[in-house]
Image 1 (tube, rainbow, N blue to C red):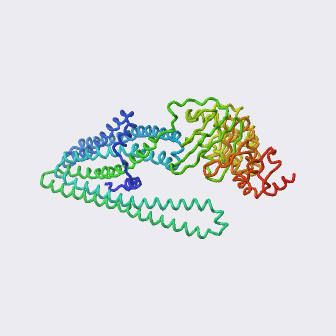
Image 2: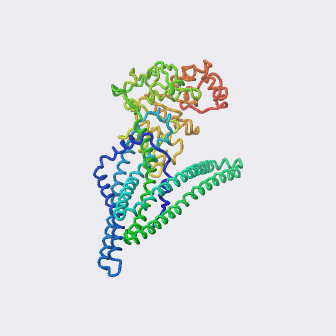
Image 3: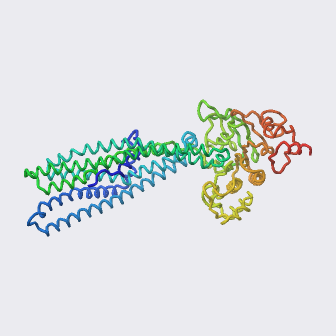
Length: 624
């Protein structure tokens, strides 16, 4: 006889110990995803009933054969016929069990396909404000972990809980049909098995929660120490790291030993209960047989019933926990799906072709009502101008650009492009005429050509190559193994920072935006690569209104206007020379960055490529 199933217990304790707040509403909504597959579900239900019926018929056939044929003068032919019938019943049950898993698997995977597609599409439409408050890891957890929990329940749990319920009912019907007194005696173990399973699962879940915490500590420590091995060796910290890792490793060992102690005790306890249950059936059944109230075949059938009784009892306890975790995961998914999208105004119209005039009119913005980030910002940029935005960290530079791209809308004031309030046009038509090159040029897994073509999917290979040539990326691309068809790893793995930036610039050139945004595009490269990127940017900026966010002030000296932000306000505005002569915040930032250069640089603005300078270079320049 098979008693406790350690695998079932393991599955139960690995389920998150959580419940949906509104289980009924969540279950009804989840069922709507299953509704298109009614025929498959009805077929699964029929197969479950067939498989459950075989569990009740098998022991009955055995008992019949014992009473009729396994006795002096019994019929060998009848016995063989009974065994053939038994084999046929179990074969039908096996086929039914197999088919129900196949069909419910089809239903489950189609439901998950739809859920994952909806989650992904929702994430693409969510406003950036959502990600300000919700970590990306949490969103990924809903897409991966929560859908996997639903997958486990739909793919296996539904069949198992239905099979267990129908199987238990079938077994009880078979038992009561054979002998009511013996059935009542046998049923006394049902509450005991459920109680023991529940007690062990709770105890084990607490311990396994501890193991997850400790293995998380081990993994985090291991990742950190491997990443920082060079620093550890440089500071002779390896011995200390050994000790720290040993402590975390030992804590994980103790947690696992405690959890294993509980799970290893479960099977022997269930085995003892099952042996006692069989002893009860054999003893009481034997007594009834002696009294002439039951046949030997009935007693044998009840022993077979008892062997099949424990499995559905344990499965019901296990799948109940799994169902709660599945509903909790579904509830989190539905919360994400119900989050309002980034929507345009009902009367929004497409943005006409942009000339490039940008006006900020007393714009204020706050991520939270009590914490304003921008305060009454006003300025105007004419088509084709280069506008630099500088200021201390946290001044609001990136927020200003985010408002222009309508990742957020102003709390007060308005932003006009070519005289049109950008809140009155669709975001897609506005962003489709803007381009951005960021500090960390983001490349996707795929070919080099695909990454350049990302801003203009319909571009030909010739147009892709032309954009790469203008960006100065063609030379290193053709030296790669497969040229433009070279596949890049995640985030452009295998390329240098400068190469990634040049490909990002080629992407922007191919997109041909009317308004260009450069956010620290040369901040993370060396001086030589910076000069290459600057030449590529010059090609890109021609004829476009360009906004440059910069901490490195050497890159903004040729700007038509420099906006100096502090605490969300424009405190200074003018050209590089004007702001230096004014001696305000910009001049102070410039002196700090270049070690107190002369107040006027006579030839700086004439440089074809802005230089990253130091005090000695400035001194030499001032002498010329």
